[in-house]
Amino acid sequence: LPILPPDLSTCDPKGTTTTPPGSQEVVKLDVDCCPPFTDKQADYKLPKFKKTRIRRAAHRLSREEVEKYKLAMAKMRELDVTDPDDPKGFTQQANIHCAYCNGPYDQVGHPGVDLQVHNSWIFFPWHRWYLYFYERILGELIGDPTFALPYWNWDNLKGMTLPPAFDDPSSPLFDENRNQDHRGKAVVDLTGRSGITDPTQLVSNNLALMYKEMIGGLDNALDFMGTAYRDGDESPPFGLGGTSENGSHTGIHIWVGDPRNKFNEDMGNFYSTGRDPAFYCHHFNVDRMWTIWEKLPATYSKKIDDDDFKNSAFMFYDEKKNLVRVKVADCLDYTKMGYEYEYSDLSWLNSRP
Ligand code: C2O
Image (cartoon, rainbow, N blue to C red; front, side, top):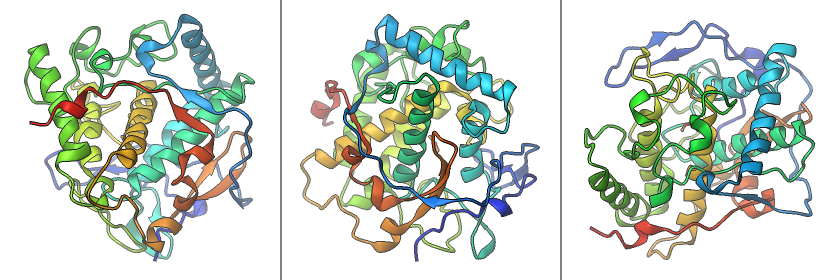
């Protein structure tokens, strides 16, 4: 059976936990990340749209585009102060990630079994929905229904640093909880912590890793998407996610997270990662990787023909504060969701080892 959407009324404000890397121990966190409650909910219908939102590479944004993004983010942060219970606020948006990943929700009908959206085949679909609403909310806040967010193009030579727009301390896109050695011109390490510092070596390792996780290391769709995860299953352990989730995706989280903090907050832990605006920019590229992988030629089918997968469902607040239930099936064709990624050169296509 499919994963059921969580029951918001049973979210446990004291149920937030984390398991530090390399340990088995479950640590309790004093963080209430449950969403505002309402008993009104509806099935979400993808709205019709006239114009496709074009998500651009962050390093190519014009000055005006950055200013617009900053304005939207400033408004989202403002809600934290003026109306902390508004689900459109930045902290509320960050808490969504915590609630779905750090234990406050049990699976409906399975008390004691956490709902976890990582390390399995719901990783890509869940995050796609999360970003979809996040983008629509920011657009709503600035009155622009075609507003699109940028992707951190870390698979491209020109995008292999923290996008400059996020590195300006006076900007609402900034977060001080980041690794200070990885700001400015520091080249990303898609493995997260290889210890390599030579930029040329890092670039070539990054490209080789991309080739491997997108093409070379894959025999079937689940290798890329992640293991099956069904109603009542225990949280899949780290490592059962797909190649992209385990690889470049986790690498960037570790690389940006602040080693001065106990749990590498913000980007280095599920509960706090959404507090860094760069997190969303990172995940737009993760989502883009899904769209690219689907179009690459392969010897196996890219489709997951399993009703448990397609019928898995989640709850989100939309840009009008309606609590809606969304299904995996409805996000599989992203073009119906009204966005597209601006093309950027895939340098790693030729990086077969
Ligand atoms: Cu939900 Cu990049 O993690």
